[in-house]
Each structure stands twice: as structure tokens, then as C-alpha cells.
Image 1 (cartoon, rainbow, N blue to C red):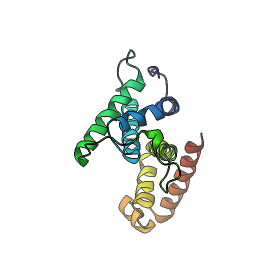
Image 2 (cartoon, one colour):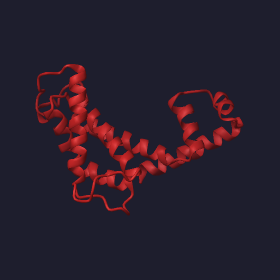
Image 3 (tube, one colour):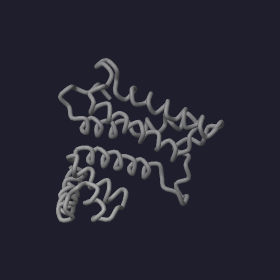
Image 4 (cartoon, helix red, strand yellow):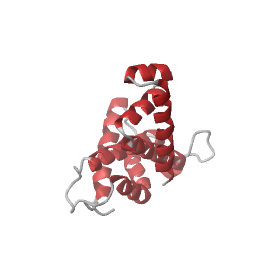
Length: 175
């Protein structure tokens, strides 16, 4: 994948990266000796890091291909994960994963990781108050009255913010 133009939106760049490099990025982590699930975790973490750096406009110079840059992040994450888990032996090739097994396929794991990264990016685009309501109500599963009290808002306004945030997230995820 080529470099990102300064005018390109980070989420669009992430979409291009995922479409063009997802399999190769998973293979990078697998070559470092990780299982399919751990490889997907490393790719997911690398894509989140890429999105954060893109939002902060802290990507490498134009002459560095983005795919190679993210592959480096994946490789480092895989090595760190392997060191932490004391995984010494390489695992089977990504194509050798048992497709008839009970666990999810690598493609399904990649799709789930991509969706999670996209959702995380969509949440980041919400205004601060909506993001706080979504975090407290949906992620931390707090009661609406508790959320209202902690944010200093009325319960009705918390419900309105949550409704609007869900609509924006749905729109963002279907674009």
C-alpha cells in the first residue's frame, strides 16, 4: 500500500490498508510463531495504533509504504506477545488451520477484528459527551441513573444522547 496523502481521512486510509494488507499482516504475526487468534490480536492492535497515529498525523514520511510500516508494528507486537507467553515454537501455517474445527476461521477472526477497529474509530468520532455516555452505558454497563448522576445530566438527556450516539455509530459502521 502506498503512503497516505495528507488530505486523506484516517478511516479511509485504514479501510484501504485492511482491504489490501490484512492477510499479509496476519502472516507476519504467524511467522513470528503466534497462533491464529494471537496473530489476529496483534494485527488488531497494530491497526488501532495506525489509526491513532493517522489521527494525530504522526505517520512516517511519504517514501515509507504504509503496509511495511504497519507490518513492523505487527512484527514487534508479535515478538512481545511471544516473549510474554514464552512461545518458542512456530505454529502451523495460517492456511493449515483446521477449517472444519470448532474454532472460528482466520478470515472470521480478521473480519471481527476489522469490525472492532472500525467501531472503535466510529466511537472516537463521537462528541465527548456522547462518547462518555456510550462508554458508561454500553461498555461499563452502568445504569442510566448512575450515568446521569456521574455526568451531571438528566436521565432523559442521557437517553437522548445514547439514542443519537447509536444512530451515528450505525451510520458510521454502514458507510
